Every structure is written in structure tokens, then in C-alpha cells.
Image (tube, rainbow, N blue to C red; front, side):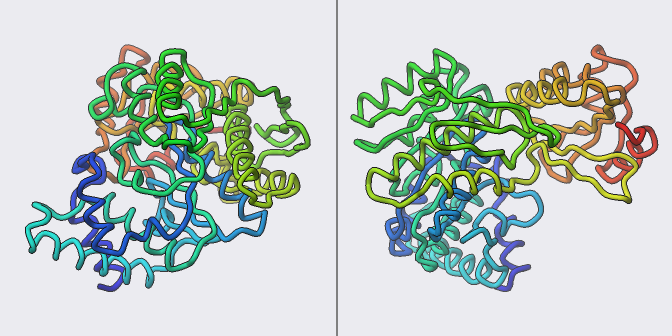
Length: 411
């Protein structure tokens, strides 16, 4: 397959979430057919509801600054599927993606033909295996792996971690993970391995109890971010923070007060690597935190062609919306805000709207180009009791055009 054919094939397997099947039997069979590439590199495995992508990006940036050859696997992607699999900060090439997708497809079809599998592995299972093959071929020193959904039954959970980490746990994907924080935390804690240290971000008590119990059961040393003392202060740049912790003094490349917690999680992750003998100096930690780039997370887009700057954020559950609202209240309270809002059908859209709409002078509802996306008219009907002056745009392009007309230069 060429790249276009490989993309068409991957998407023919069904929507990443709608067609998802949690479980490890299929991905283990696929990995075995491909000579278990996940056993050919050590990993850092990161689960959580919010912050796991930012924490993974920070961790990888620190390791790269320490002159280690890194792999980074994240999801979802923003523009190209090649973003999900990176080596030394570079997306997998389209040629390599197509080549490895062909290898994974052939192995998948052989497993079905031989009766070892009833159906081909899913979108996420096959993309995970493409990444694992690429990391093995590239001979990375360490791969940083972000869990897709949950942890215990996520396709990434066949890796060989030196350290695991669990970022903030909150409500999301309840239909797959459970309806209580304890149930959701139990699924996230499924990445904890026997005798392997786990770094845990601050958690609600119900979630923390479950994680602590699982770590104790597996004799996994637990390192709590909440137990550490650090200082964080807002600095001159819009929404950026300076973090001081022991010998580390870094201005974070990612915006928002919440990123100080993600940065601390990353610092403690790499701290655990020092014990087995990995050389990661303070200078690398500071450089990684300063230079990390993670698009779509409070990303400020400025251009002479824009009538006003754009702040792009992928908040997709109430906890993420609370974090975004806190940022707007802290850094944008004197500026008129136009909110372009869209959500997937399976998300808590009303709860997110309830949190975010009051922060905006104007609200424009729209939809992403995704089969899971709620129509703007659906969102308007759902949220009309929150405010009546809601605009609707059928596409993001239309929403941006409308926003440009009604947002002043200081907005």
C-alpha cells in the first residue's frame, strides 16, 4: 500500500472510538505474529483522564534534551495520523507508515484466515503496532507511550515499562470505564506492573485509594506528586509559568497553571529513571520543559492575517473545561472572548457548556469533521437554557469567519 491506500485501509476498520474493542487478546496475537516488537525497547507508560498527553510530551522532550533517542506514541492526532508516532521529535514518514501498515495488515489478515482471530484488529490496535514496529526498527533508547482509553485493556498495555504514571483521573468514557471514580481509576491503574515504580499526579480521594491499593498489591513503589513541594509563578508571557523544584528552575513551554502539575509528574518520571542509571541532568530537564511543543493545548495562534489571536484547546470533558475556564478567568478576564464550541455526541457537552459559556461574550456552535460530532443545532437545543444568543456554523471554517467579524482586536 502507498500512504493514501494505507490511510484508507486504517479508516475502513471503523471509527477509532465507535469501533473500539477493549481487550489484550487480539493485540497480543498481532504482536506475536510480528515478533513482539514491544519487547525490543523499554518504555514509559502514561495513563490518566486529563494531562497524560502533555505529560508524555514533556517527558519525551526531557529525554531528547538528555541526548537519548526517543519514541513518542500519542493519540488522537490533529492533522495527520503520522503525528501519533514520532522518533526524536519527528513524525513517522508517510513512506514508513505505509510500509509498516502493509506489514500489520498482512499479519492481521493472516491471523483471520488461519482462524486465530475472528475479525481484524481495530484501528487503534493496528496503529499501536505500527508505532511499536517503528520504535523497534529505529532502535530507540526509550519510548514514551500514552494510553488510548483506560489502561488495563488498552492496546498499549503490552509494553515493557521502566516507569508508569497516572495523571489526573476524572469522568470520561464512562460507557467503557465505569460510572464511579473508583472504577475509572481501577482501569487506569491496570497499567501498574509488579515492582515497577508508578508516579501519580494529585487525585480525588476515591481515585487515589484505588491506585494506592493496586500499587501495594503489586509491590510497585508509588511516587506521589502531591507529596512534593514546588513553587510556581506566572511569568511575562501570556499564561506561562515558571516552576522551581529542588535544582530545577524552568519556564514551561506549555501554557496554564495546570501544566506545572504535569511538569512535576514528568520530572518525577525521569527521576525514577536515574536510579537504573540513565543520565538525565538538571539542564536537560529545564531544556525539555522549556522547549516542549504540544499543539492544541492552550495553543496561542497569532498572525497579521488574523483580526484577533486564537487560543486553541482540546478540553473534552468537564474537568478539562474547568481547567480551560480557570485559564480564561485568570488571563483573559479583561479581554472580550468569542468561544467557538463543538463536542462529540458521547461527551458531556452540557456540563462543559455550563462551565465555559459564561466566560464568553459571544458563543458560536459548530462541529468537527468527524462522525462522532454533535450537530451545532443539537448543541444549541441542548444548551439553550444557558443562553439564548447562540450562533451556529456548519463548519469550523464558517465559525472562524464569523468569529473574525465579531471579535475586536483586543479579544
